[in-house]
Each structure stands twice: as structure tokens, then as C-alpha cells.
Image (cartoon, helix red, strand yellow):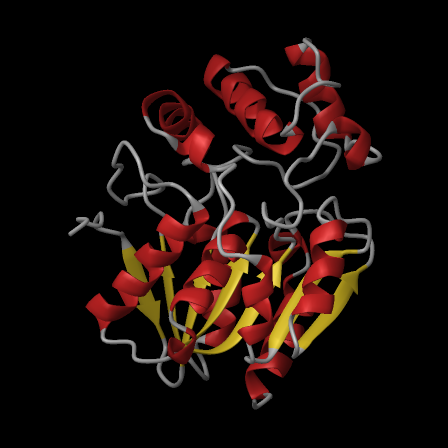
Length: 278
């Protein structure tokens, strides 16, 4: 039997259960604004993915399926028989895997700018479109051959972390950026680099999860929330076609981290989802 890592977590509020799952290189603090807002009506669980924040860091087990199994184990540990689950970026991939594994445990599903490897196996520079000011600065500082990189988003995270550790300040252009300001930025950058260097995360990230044909079995009301020019647009379109009860919302004038930059719109859409029934 596989021993699952201890996951740092916390709960806010009371009511029907909602679990929020952050993406790579972040931690549960990413969700504080939304979790606090929802806690007036729901019991909200936020946690750090394995290897992130204050959770344990095993050397392997970082596929989306592994992360989905971690979520199910946490629900078992906390006695959550059923919950709505909301995932951002890679956290959405983990949430989707958990729903595929044990659909009876979930009432609602929300995926926010999530790219699913099974549906969109690469993200190359020519797929990205216009780079943000921060990304342009990161690419210029890093140098190298970005055109042949199959995972430019992953590479941006690594380069941004190395800049933070080295004390290199880059122009962000008013954007929310990974490893930006704040007391935990340097710690998070060092932690991310440690994950890349000392665990199987880099390889596991590219492992696809469940078969796309299985998505049609997901009957939960589903919110697909993506920026209007999302780099995961191919995933969003496929998911909208494959999931029977999915509603796609394109958020204008937003970027990948819109749950932080556009909290009011995200809260409104999530609350509308949670009010819906199967």
C-alpha cells in the first residue's frame, strides 16, 4: 500500500464542503481571498499540494493522478464524504483525476485555466501568443532556445524562481507574478527549485491522467473558467465538448492568475455553480 504524504491544510467556515486546490509552485495561501469569502456559507478546505507549502515532500508521486489520490486521502482523513472541488492550473488536473477516480465523492467541479495533458500535451512558445511584460523580461534574462521548449510555462516558473533566489528584480508591469512580493516569495522559489532538482515532478508533470473517453461520465455541474485568451484554450474547448454539464466562462482582460487578480468575478461564478444542482 502506498503511503501518502502528510498534507498541511486548514478549514474555514461551516456548511456544505468545498475544497480548493492550488497549482504548481503556489500554496494554499493562493486561495485565502476566495476561501474567506465562501466561508460565510460553506466549510472550505484549503491545503498544500505534496512538496508545496508545509506539506511533506516525497521524492516521487507528482502526476495529476497521484495528486488526485492525495486529495481523496485528505478527504478521508478529514471525514469529508462529499465536497465541491475547485482547482486552478495543475490543481484543476488533480481535481479532475479525483472526480474520475471517485465521482460519488464530488457534488460540483470547477477548473480554472487548467491544461490537461491528455488533451493538450505541449505548450510551446508559438502557442503562447503575446508574452506579458514579466515573461518577456524573464525570457530575456534567461536566454537560451525557448522556441524548441515543449513546456514554456514550466520553464517560466523555473526561470522566475532562479531570478528570485539570485535577487534579480524584473519589471512585472503591474501583473501578479510567481515568487513576487511578500515574505514567503524567496522560500517558495527555493522550494520550487528543490522540487525540480530532487523529485520526479519534472517528469511526472507530463504524464497524462485518465482517458478522455471517461470524461463523459462526469455528471457534476462543472464550471470551466478561463481567460479570454487562455494558453489552455484547446483544453477548455475539448472539456466543454466532453463534459455533459460543463459551462465555459471566458474572463476578459485577465491572465493565468485571475483568481487573485479578479476575485469578485471568480466568487460570483463559483457561488452560482455551488447553487446549481445535478
